[in-house]
Structures are given as C-alpha cells and as structure tokens.
Length: 582
Image 1 (cartoon, rainbow, N blue to C red):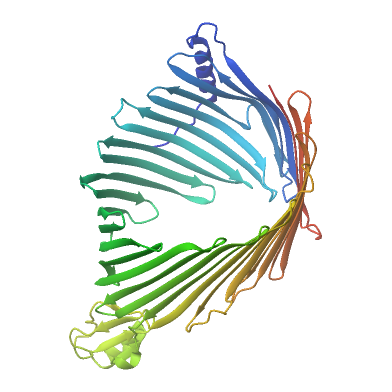
Image 2 (image 1 turned 90 degrees about the vertical axis):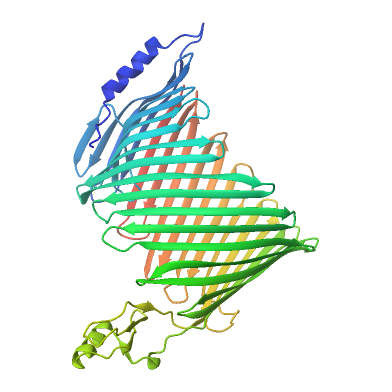
C-alpha cells in the first residue's frame, strides 16, 4: 500500500475551517503564541553547504466546547545551497500540525520539511508526513491506536524514504489484558534496494490472586514477521508463574516458559525451561535465595536438556556509621549428560564511605569463576580434523565402519558412523572445550569537594580474564575524570578526560574543556575545546557561542565550530539565529 503525501493546502484549509466553525465559549477568544526567527548556517566542505531560513511559527488555540484544538502554523521560508545549486522554499523549514483532542479521541496531523547543516559539513534535508489517531472508547472498552507516516531524508545528495503504517489495540478486562498490533514498513532510496516488511503481534496475559498471598501470572505472545530480504518467521512465547508469600520472611516462586521459533525453510527451534526459587530473609540483614530447574533447547540439530541449581547469599549493612558494606556470593551448577557438569561461582564486594566530609569513596570488586569439567580431546576419538578431512578419510577407506567416532576440530562437534556406507554419518553432537576461567571487575570512584566552588570526580575501572586466581591483574582498564570550578554565579569552568587502555588493542585518549560566562541575565558566552587521540590519528575542535537577550523577548545567538584546529584540512561551521517571541 503506497502512502500518499499529506497536502499542505488541504491542511491549511482544515485549519481555517476549524478557526471559523469552532464553537465559542462566551467571551473566550482565540489564543495565539508566536515566535519569529531568522537564521543562517554555512560550513566548509566539498560542497560548501548553507541554509538560510526564517519566518514566523504560530501556535493557535481556538476556544472550543467539547474538544481542544492546538494548531502549529510555520509561515517560514528557507534557502539552501549545496555544490553551487540553490533551492528556495517559500513555505518550508517547519512543521505544520494540528492536535485535536476530545474526551474519547486524539488526532495528530503533521507535515513539514527541515533543512540544516551537520557538523560534518553535510546538508541534511528531511520531509515528514504523519497522521496519528488514538481512540478511547467508554471505560472498560478497547483502546485503538493507528499511525501513518512517511519520512524522506537526503544527506549529501543520497536520498532514502521510509513509509510506515501501524495499528494496535489494548484491552483490559478485569484481571486480563488482550493486545494486538499490525505494522507495515517500506524502505527505498537512491542507494537502497526497496524492501517491505510486515509484523503481526497478538498477545494476552494477566495476574490473579488464586489464594491468599498466592498470585498466578500467565502470558502468551504470538509474532509473525515477513520481509523481502529475509526468511519469514513465527514466534510463540508462553509463560506461567506462581508466587507464594507464606510468611513475611519467606517467598516461593515457580515459572515455566516455552518459546517456539519457526523460520521458513528450516527446522523449528523449541526452547523451554522450568525453575523454582525460594527467598529467605534472615536476621542480620542476610538474604539467601536457592533455586533449581531445567531447560531444554536445540543445539546443532540435537535436543539437549540441562539441569541447573544455584544458591545466592547477600548481606547489606553499615559496619560503621559512615561505611556501608554490601556482600554477595553465589554458586550455580549445570549438568548435561553429554557434556558433564559446569560450575560457576561469583562474588561481589561494595564499599561506600565518606573518608572526610569533603571526600567520598565508592569501591566495588566483582569476581566470577567458571569451571567446565567436560572437555574434548581428539585423542579419545577414532579420528579428528575438518569435515573435508572426514569425508576424504571415509572415501579413502571405502566406507568407515559403523560406530567410528570423528571429532570436528573446527566446530567442536562429534559425528558417529551409522553404517559402513560412505557418507552415512549421525547428526552432530556439540561439545564445549574445557574451561577454567576467572573474571575480575574492579571499580573505584572518588568524589572530592576541595572548596565550596570546586568539585572533582575520578573513576577507575579494570576488567581482566585469567585461567588462575589473579586479582591484581589489570587487563583492560580506563580512567575518566571531571573537574568543575564555579567562582561565581556567572562563570563556570569544566575539564574532563577519558583514557581507555585495552589489554590487547591500541589505547585511546580524549579531553574536553569548556567555559561559560553569563555577563547579564539570560546572556552568556560559551567556549569549548575537545581533543581525541586514537593510534596515530588525532582530532580536535574548537567551539564557541554567544547569546544576546535583546529587548521585548528577542534573542540573538551565534555558534561557531572549527575542526582539525592545527591541521591544513580545517572545517568550520557557523550558525546565526535571531528569535522573537510574542
């Protein structure tokens, strides 16, 4: 379905009719708010783009009885230049709009064009058409929403268009909720292959107290997705949960979930799980949560079932008046008949303290230990290598005997010969190599207030991975900090920096300095400098701005950006705007 562009003249006609026929409320009069603006933006670049725009933006609110109307009328113009060509839009660079609201509905209409220049010295031209309607029927009845929109974007001469239509509904009946939606999206452009996609969603769910202190919650979602560029798919998701609170210090919960993902031309992927958990709040601000369950899923064409169990304990309290400590420890087990048992441990320590009235420290340490005892060793199998080597070996021997086990060293899969016939292999069984891995994450934040006018924040983060317990290993780490100085109400200085130091890749650094000075109420000057370094490349830019509040709600603003400050290929961007409200 092709979307038709909203006609500006028709929208203007609707606005005039609404202003004329709108019912009057006694001596009530139409309210008009407005803003007059003039602005220009130009930048250096290959095409030297520029935009000069201005005009009046009006907000009109006529008096009505049974509905409210708010109209947005941009009586504006724009002149855009790029690559030596100039485009004049007598009515442009603004959004026409109408909001009509009643007790049971809300209608929004928009149409307009926006042109500007990005900091990368590219002309951005966007056209928007939109109509949206929300209908609220009588209390307890379904609610309906619909949206029809088209967005056209042109960047550096490359155009793209997105058409979207959607309709949805939501209905609450007692403790049940029913929902549905349908959407269609079509994209096209000068450098894009046209594509259309549809999405249908249906769902229902609810929560009900079946017994005192017992809640049953269920949910079902159906989603159907079709697209030109990908395979169609259907997803069913179902869940059922029960929560029981027999005592204030004890809670018991159980949940069952099942997801079926059907992709056309491929086998269905079915995943399901069931789990039960218990929460116990013990004296001394200690909480213990044991849980257990099982999950079933497809892995490399084979169905797998994994049983799991876990226990977690946490503690949070003030060891001293100004030191808060949070501790957490957990252990989980996973058992799989085909892969053995996996064990995972985790622990965390958080400290929050005020070292002095002006220095606050927050520190945290997180550690996980994963131990997968099941391993794959090619020596334990009859043969190993790539799948190509497997097939070649089968051909050379004229058919490997039944029961011959071959290990795929690329994908960690195991194949077994069903018979001596060449190529008669079983479906692959996936194995996970043995792993014993420690992960550490350390974070420290210090907040310092040296004086009443100065604030400094320093953050340090480190993350590392090792095959043995090594808490002092740095791994990948980063620093970031900021310093703010406000000598008086009018002046503000700030300095910030970031250093990212990965364990393997190249480090990167950046810094930003800004200054703001308000010399009169509502009038200020902004200055800023930023610097970035990655490998051998550096980038810096200087920004500045000044704002003037003139008489009678009139303001003038000037912004300037200069990139690659100390290089030959410099780029700049200048924006000048004049605004007046009435």
